[in-house]
Image 1 (spheres, helix red, strand yellow):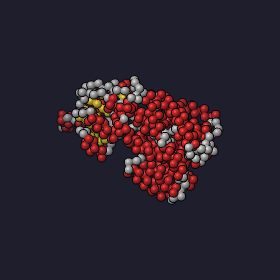
Image 2 (cartoon, rainbow, N blue to C red; image 1 turned 90 degrees about the horizontal axis):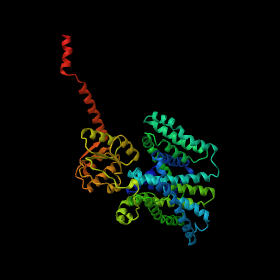
Image 3 (cartoon, rainbow, N blue to C red; image 1 turned 30 degrees about the vertical axis):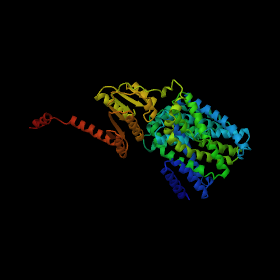
Image 4 (cartoon, helix red, strand yellow; image 1 turned 180 degrees about the horizontal axis):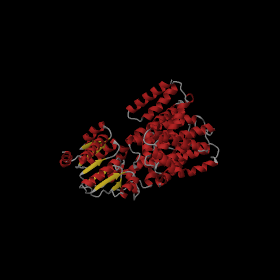
Amino acid sequence: MEPAILVITLVCGLLVSRVGLPPLIGYLAAGFVLFMFGIEEDSLPLLRQLADLGVTLLLFAIGLKLDIRSLFKAEVWAGASLHLMGSMLFFVPVLKLLGLIGLSQLLPLDWGQLALLAFALSFSSTVFAVKVLEDKGDIQSLYGRVAIGILIMQDIFAVAFLTISKGEMPSIWALALLLLPLARPLIYRAFDRVGHGELLVLFGLVMVLVLGAWLFEAVGLKPDLGALVVGLLLAGHRKANELAKSLFYFKELFLVAFFLTIGLNGLPAWEDLTLAAVLLLFIPLKVALFLLLLTRFRLRSRTSLLASFNLANYSEFGLIVAAVAAAKGWLPSQWLVITAMALSFSFLLAAPLNKLVGSVYQRHQTRLRRMERHPLHPEDRQIPLGNPRFLILGMGRIGSGAYDELKHKFGGEILGIEHKQELVDKHRRLGRNVVQGDATDSDFWEKVERAPNLELVLLAMPHHAGNLFAVKQLKKMDYQGKISAIVQFGEDIQSLRDSGVHSVYNMYEAAGAGFVDHVSQELLRRQPTATETAAPVAQAR
């Protein structure tokens, strides 16, 4: 039956993606289809292991990309904590009321069980949010970083609950894990020496599965927490991003197994479907509470709305909490299916919501801006450009090289835009004129000041969609100068030219041409002159 599992999963994923929804919804549907054919999760233990591995790799990847300092920002730790408390204060009495008016599954639950259920429903999905952000290329945007930070805090709350639910204290040896940062120099030395091929992938798997998951589980802590902690430990290394990319497809493949296992938990009864649909009605209230809290922390209304829509769903960690509670006898077992259906429905709702968020903001922009608190968050304020002649969007390796070459050949005022604060600080230390901003965020273009003498804009961002978006925004600003862009793939060139880009450079082709130019110059530099060639001839005579 294993080939049928792969075929059904692929077909469902393709069908769903054809209508513009994330493939993960197709994987959920595939799980239900497989269950209808008589396949249950208990008959596929390997699938469960792969699903757990997918979640573990997901948390490791989040840790690799996370700046631990972001968790200490008020909008993250306080926003997540206040939202958790607010959600529980709302859910508990409302769920009790729903039980009293006729929803039979809720009627027998006591206040403690309702609180546990409210706790599970308060989380948002890390898997879904990260997938949406990665697909949009917004992981490093301000709203993306805020959303991921809140999700990490929620994951920490969930892992703390799961650890407590084991009914036993961690081993005394768990205290030794506090010494892990002392091992960082040794780990970084090994990280430096594994190269860039299969050894890098193997190193990453050893880090997440042995140093993270296995070691933490051995001392009585959750393995997922270990994966997150080890990811954070490696996040400061220069090859952390390369490692995340190397493990990307492993994580994606194993997460397919995670979504399949949700559907394999069983088909719900009609009354369970009704209750799951009722729970779906609470999603807009979760969004509204996030929006209110984030604007209170002085984020722009658009930033707050984007982050809130990204969190507009129920969570796989909520499902895990429900599973543990059902296994412990704290909740009736039917709540595992109800929670799974509510999670699935929320994904179906959240996918189109995240596509419509831009139009929602445009339609209600005036009303939403009334919610803003001033002065705005330092990362969300007006961006002064000064009066540059050249503007570079994206100050990675290519953008940095372009900056230095422009400075060398033309001089004049050059400005770089980069969304990562650590890169901005590094460039400033090196004497480059760089300000923080995310050119893939339309709020950036609303915040940015006009530069009247701008002659050339270089689009050096890694994502094609981000470069296209920047071109559209430049046109809206009635920019009349030249635009140049880089691409990774040849098929992206025409769409950039059609959008108005004057010159497009394929990174790999340009690198090859540059290499040949360099070699040619070396050959010309070393080629002997006519006098030098005549001298040996004269000596020979």
